[in-house]
Length: 168
Length: 236
Image (cartoon, rainbow over all chains, first blue to last red; front, side):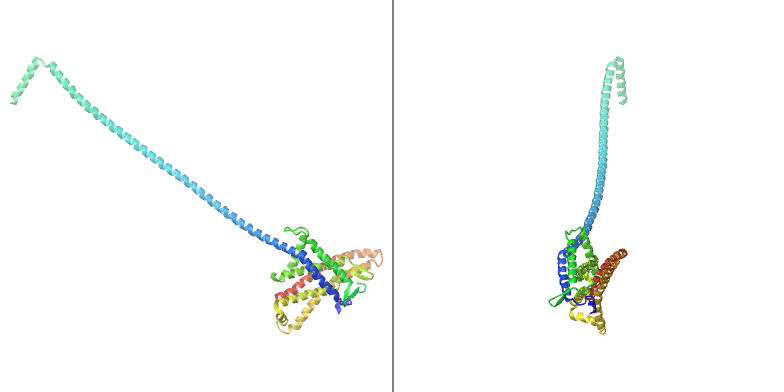
């Protein structure tokens, strides 16, 4: 054959030797180099994929947490505003109530005072009337006692009798 | 390559000392090269592990480009070992050429047609085996008569020429490279100092080029092997 022109002969023994040696070397390389290396590469690929997955997951979680916080913050702000509003409102209403009560009290007091004053006036008036009556009677009796001398008595009796006569 | 073949007979088979010794050296070198690189494997690769993983990625890339990943795991390994082995075999003759008593003892095993045809035979046999394993014997042979039966002789020739060219291409390249190296070395010592001065740079340049050729040929060999296998595995 022309292929073996260089070698002069077809060395079947060489072919066999190479075949067997190649198989043995392949087995050794498979066991000592190929298997551990490809396993390690596979492991690394898995790890990287896992890392990417977990990173995406944790980022998503963080985002969720952040949005939740934001919402909570908004809620608490609103709550604070509501509390302040409520306090304001209740203060307002309390103020109004206090004012109303005070006004009422003042009115009552005023009314009472007016009433008392009226009463006092009435009492005073009535006292004065009685005093005037008593005084006038006293004065009249005193006048009658002192000034009714003989002439006057005569005149009075005369006028009285005259009057009686006229009435008759 | 000077000298007669250095052979001996055993069990009715002819053995060639040159091939046996060179081959053993390459097998041992290949194993210890890969063995040394695969020590202390870590999740975060350092040093040798990087080189080994680069080679694995490289050969895996060749295989992955040709066939679907579910069928590729075994062939990836075959291509990986074949690539490293042929690469080292190609470079061996550039570094060491050793003769004794008019016989060659150490040279590139791939500069011998018997060795390259053995490797080609392995690759082609594996591709046929893959075809039979996928389609069954009947389906596999039916492929030779597709799309019509007149294609049969052409396909037969194609298969045979695949085998021949696969083995002879690498043999031709490496053999020619080593022959030229040897001729340059002979020229260097033919007329004393002047020829040494002229030959030395030429030898250096040709050695560098041969390293390149050796790498390319290893790549071409495994790429074609992958193509032949994938054609049988994936169908055309």
